[in-house]
Length: 264
Image (cartoon, rainbow, N blue to C red; front, side):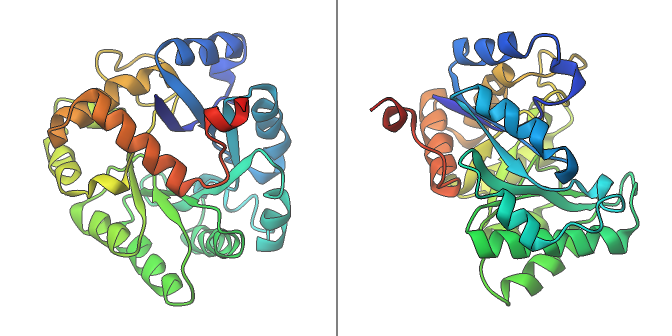
């Protein structure tokens, strides 16, 4: 079984065929999906999708793009919302200096608020990091000094230094379809160096469809293509890689019930 640890089923791209998208994921061997919150104020929409499907879970949080419009979100609010049985993580939060759609100080403030919520709940923080390696690493190190918290660097496309920092602090690294792109040799080299017990895979659907679907709308079923390239990169079989990444997922996302437990 594979897990798509990061997708956005609430986005309009899936509005008219969400049932079919979830079904195709299952047909492709993708047994669990996590649909990720990008706005706390729209959390009820994300939560309703997770409630609709037995194999879909969700997070609660504010994407760095939306840090200005949701600058009033508190750790207490995140903690309270995370008590819903389908909420298995905090975020996605972090820093995005590529688009800079929110002031950087507000992105950092929101990032630290989400870290506090992850620390208090024990739920993993889903971290968005783009063109902000040094500042993300600095905040992670500073906040880890105040108390440990679980986290994952999602859709990893940063440099080796941030990968090392993440692993050193106990974090996990998740690879998306970017890993399959022809010009991603440097990223594949980073993947080779990540301990196998810290690896996850994701789609970030509807974005970043892997080869051979690059340029098209992504969907959770396609995580199998990313996992296949990861397997080749780290020298394991697709079956071994599926088993490892899924086991890592359950270790990190402790609130998710394994399929065998749900059917028992």
